[in-house]
Length: 179
Image (cartoon, rainbow, N blue to C red):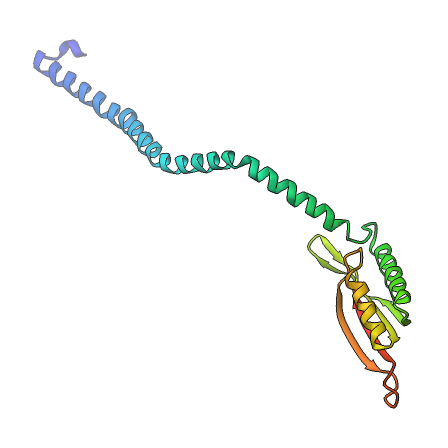
C-alpha cells in the first residue's frame, strides 16, 4: 500500500508517523517522568525534616533512655502503693483491714463501715469504703494523719464531722470516705 504512494506522499506519511511518535513519547514518557520528578522534589523538604527529627532523637538517645528508666522506677514505686489487684472484693477487704488497723492505732471507735461501688479511672480501679468513727478531735486528726502517711496509696474523698452529744461536745462522729 505504501508502494503505491508517491514520494511526496511517503514523506508526509513519514513526517506524520514521526510526529505521532514524538507526541506519544511526550505524553507517555516525558510528562510522567517530569511529574514524578516534580513530586519527588516536593517530598524532599518534608523528608529532610523527618530525617533531622530522627537524627535529633538518635542524638538524645542516652537522655531519653535515662528518662525512661527514671519514669519506670518511679512507676514501680508508686504501683507498690496500690492495693492488691486480684479482684475488687479483695482490694476492698484489704482497704477495710487497713482502715480498721489505723482506727485502732488512733484510739477511735469504728461505728460502721460500708464498701461503696468501685469507680473506674482508665486502667485504675478506685475502691471507696465509707467508715464512721467516733472519738475526740485529736484522735480523729491522728487517724487522718495515719491515713495520709499510709504505706498504701489512700485518699480521703469525703469527711463529714458532727458532734455526738450537743450538751457535751467532747466526742465527735466522723464519716470518712477512703479509697
